[in-house]
Amino acid sequence: MSMPTDLVAEIRSRAGRRGVSSYITEAVRHQLAMDGLAEIVAQHEAEHGVLTEEEIDAARRELFEHADPHESGRDGADPHGSGRDAA
Image (tube, rainbow, N blue to C red; front, side, top):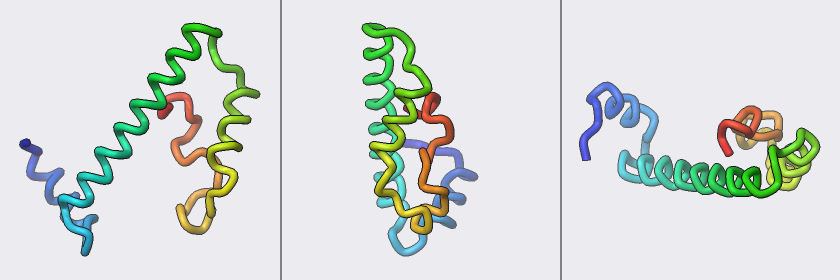
């Protein structure tokens, strides 16, 4: 696997004690989960039409209602913005 040196330098600066391999492993797991969610949404929309804002809000509440806003540094809502691009 190869990666641009500037990206490796940024990863090293952020990885800290957990190390580069652990940081990259976590990032890949996260991306695979996001890819899986995108596939689920695409399949649902192909079968049932585009998700409504109400459906998106309900899913966001179900997924993130237990999120600690102080732990993530976010407001406890969808940690990926609108959820439409990330899902």
